[in-house]
Image 1: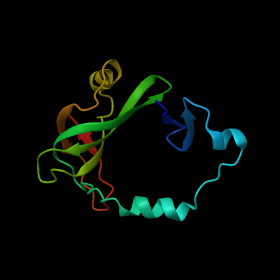
Image 2 (image 1 turned 45 degrees about the horizontal axis):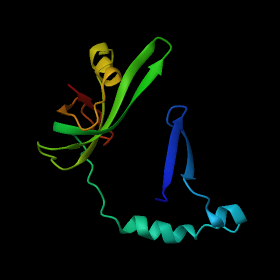
Image 3 (image 1 turned 60 degrees about the horizontal axis):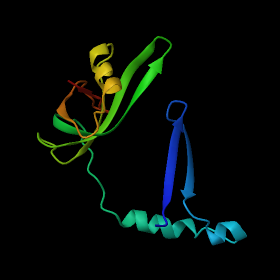
Image 4 (image 1 turned 180 degrees about the vertical axis):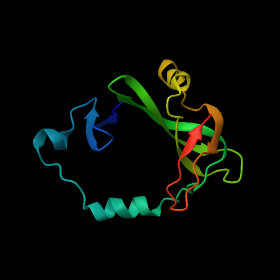
Length: 139
């Protein structure tokens, strides 16, 4: 059947974003050049109506990996960044952001050699943070 796909890409240090919308059929509006977007406030109202996710200030407990990336330096992979959702602990059900421990080549290898998406693993608060910019680490 007819379908469309949204393809996104990040560049730089996650500071650039590109996207494309592709279809497996000729879109009449696109072919005839009559397509126009709706006013952004309409889409924004739809987005604002979604329930908001809670974010853990000091994540601790078992989490499920929902997204990740590995940052490379001149010598190769140096840091993993994880976004996930805690399934237990004091902030169960909250989202979190965590870094792999610096210099933990074994953990980075697990991210590079396999797909950690959906994997459950322990996360713990690593750095005290009175400024609410806490960092967590995967263990």
